[in-house]
Length: 232
Ligand code: APR
Image 1 (spheres, rainbow, N blue to C red):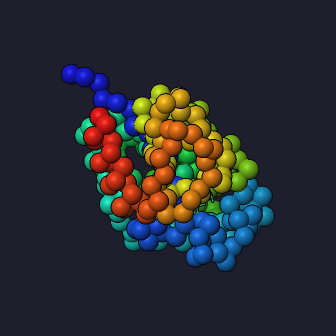
Image 2 (image 1 turned 90 degrees about the horizontal axis):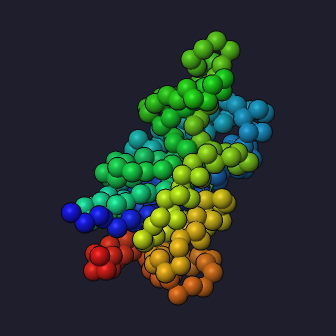
């Protein structure tokens, strides 16, 4: 049996837009009504943890009402022909629900929370509304298992390794404005084709290996899947 080629996908909020989750920097962006620094930084957590919990409780509740779209499904189906790793900046679980089995969450997961006392104590909180005082051991507190602005990105090392071993890269639904996540798109080996799917042009250094598909994820990813299947 020949080994499947390695396909890596870097996804951002845009892939979940057609499922009904607003992007961050769009007109009806998730941060609207809140300044980022009030809900998604360690300082915000120290200043007003109740507000931060409420913000993520609300997002967690809304995430139960949405479903994977054809974009997520196309990527899951590609596992039949490629060794696919999804590196997502999204904290929803729509890639997994579509059937993708190998997902790295760079910025954490909405349906998980962890102890402030021992960060290795991670709990499944799907359907939960976390309150101040909720936790595991005395004096500790459950916090969202989310990488906030200003925090380290623990999964970067693993993600870098995956990107450097890729035969193909898809970059879908990300504004490429948030680092270090965006830097992954520039870590492929020379000659590795990069397919960027986005209805809006995003900043990429010009390279002959870059193919821009100016479309939404549901349609654009089908086009990329067709190209990849022919190249395989
Ligand atoms: N299909 C594909 N792309 C889309 C679609 C769609 N239907 N709709 C919008 N987009 C694109 C937008 O053009 C934009 O480039 O998705 C991108 C969304 O960008 P952001 O809102 O900045 O989201 P993202 O890049 O994932 O943000 C990165 O920033 O706020 C933090 O931690 C948060 O993980 C997030 C990170």
